[in-house]
Length: 406
Ligand SMILES: Cc1ncc(COP(=O)(O)O)c(C=O)c1O
Image (cartoon, rainbow, N blue to C red):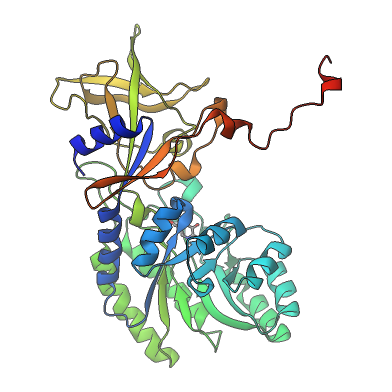
């Protein structure tokens, strides 16, 4: 997408605004499929937590994608977007048995990540095909909050508990059809994937009726110019070969599953915000925008670095700015960032705003959430309207009149 298109969309739809480039999502999907084209049965389940707008789900469905979900509400959104239940995987953590039973009744593939629920579910539904999430105890990921496969993590069933797990499966006679792991996000080193894969292969040998192995996700995408990223093509070459060899060893052609979020949508997203004020203090020049961590929390939450460009005046002399939001506490998007000279009213564009941006947005400070636009075949399509005051009031119930003077 070009800056002139983004500026035109900000003009047309108002700001702050999220824009997603459909072509980039499609090219990332194709790139991953191509990297693993040597695997006969490959399945990509989009991790919709990254960006759950129904139009994005529809776009990926058209490409043949399945869905990775973590809540019953995500499952419902997936079904609403037209996915067949068999194309939806449900990988919850810490949810109730009741929720799992409800999702199971919808015909969705259940993935269980603790022994307690496994035993209860297996006892009640021995015939339901179940996947098990293993914790391989691999420390991987760009940040402690997104490293989820290590020994202190709450996710998955420890590989050290395999004997106990196998006993539960034997006692309940439940039907284990898949093994899953997800070690974390932003993993650069493909050796980490390959090492964790070996742990999964070893675990898989304990189960006779497998149909698939799910390797989760965690691919690192570039966040700024010349940034490093996971070498998907190299990983595809090495892991496909090893996976195919494992299938021969196992005696059955299994399906290889990935569930990428960031890889598919991060780079496709742009967040546009207007500069309300340029404020020079004794130490810093702040550019204050008409947004805050209520709309894009990643810099404050994870220390993420989103590349920021002044698309209104891209050719201006570069200066150092701290880009901040309007929220009533520290709300910094970037510290001392070199950006071409900013004037009040300029539109700043945040890159990599596709994954974990809108989906983590809130109404903190009673602000409205921004609109979302999909850029498809050279045209902007509104896929979520800006919120209004009615949205803030929706579901709120005022005190009855007799309490009004308390
Ligand atoms: C189980 C699971 N699968 C897939 C993903 C997607 O990861 P990423 O966005 O890094 O591709 C996550 C992210 O939190 C996850 O927890």
